[in-house]
Length: 421
Length: 175
Image: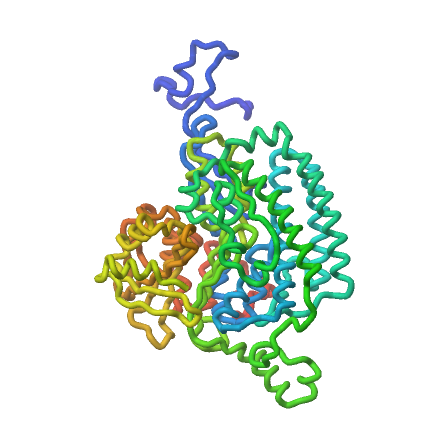
């Protein structure tokens, strides 16, 4: 029987074979590497692709000649779903946009809706929104840094980061009742107040997270392998980044000082003291350092906000927008009617349109919302920060080595849920 | 909310601006005639420093009171130095939904225009690679149009007839 491992004889022995003939005279040890063009599919579910992205990579040797990025494997009709449910029922869909920072997506959507109604939420609710957002900013950045370290071969920083992440998830679970799919905000405020003793526990967790971050940083920032693969790879110029519509830490790593928390302050960010770190080179290493530095700034914000949080209501006292308190629902006819109308018909948002953006962990999370005056949104457009960032990846990696694709993909921190809606 | 950019655009290209208004939150909007869009965008980018390309989307106005022409494509462009947004609209009819592409002006327009083509069926003339971006090539129709049924399904691979799978409200098992 023929040996199945032996290559089959060339079907046309007379026709010259360009792969082998040129090197027929070379000895086996000194033979040239064949470098005819090759197509490689990275993905759709490659371990280094966060989410499901397919990169059709055209390789010549190890150089990427062309990369075509194909997305959409996670598309689940976010917009269409939102347009067919009430305003409050959109919230669970927004959780699932970015599973590393769901609270920011919740609050970003609500912020846009409240702007459309023309509603000012109570100060305590604004503080809690800041606290939740910054907790999740640390969570998102930790996820990104941990995955970057792990995919470049370091598992210990991943474990430390996971421990820190778990602390945040525990606090979020105490606050919202869910670990990842929070659905915590409500139009006009929040679902519930802070639990008993939560502030002290959060402060204790922050101390531990800070310690763990020092560990992660010391393991990665000056690690020879890590630095060699990050520094000078995945470079994008500031002009290109702006042209593509990059925002957030990836844009700031190019040296552009743009943070919506400073340029268009919302909630109580203008009462809190923090800095916006800015990078210089726009390479992978700068994007990594940006995230490390932003976690420290978020820590600063959190400690101030937890110390300054005022007492008071957490949701507006308007039964056309917020559900009435339960004793009123059970005891008064007005309460019953308001509750019924809010649940069955939804909040009657006045007709109009709004574009509003908040600074989420990856950049500008924009919402364009159109209301026709009914209880359901007529149109919900989400401007996910990852979408423009991912669209630039092909041009960044073209002409570079295949190995640079992995750290580049890590540091842009693409989240499948929001990019693919 | 300053209207600096739109004032400059109106002064420079009076023929391009069809309408201007403030929305209920104070955002300033300009409705641009489609054929003038590239030069308005280039003017915004190169003269007024509106360089950050934020996003594009479309609105299908089928069920709104004002629904002629049917589609409204909205553009959001930001200026980092002026810290200001500019919001443009282009209205296109259902019979010939075509707009000049902004890819020569903004690289970021590439995927967003593909997105609008994918979900609303608005074509962008001069786009280098106008493919679907989130759906597959074999998909029929444009699902964010209001007349596309919410529960319509177009599986590439036939779904297995498993009765126990609950496919969401409005469907009865497999459809």
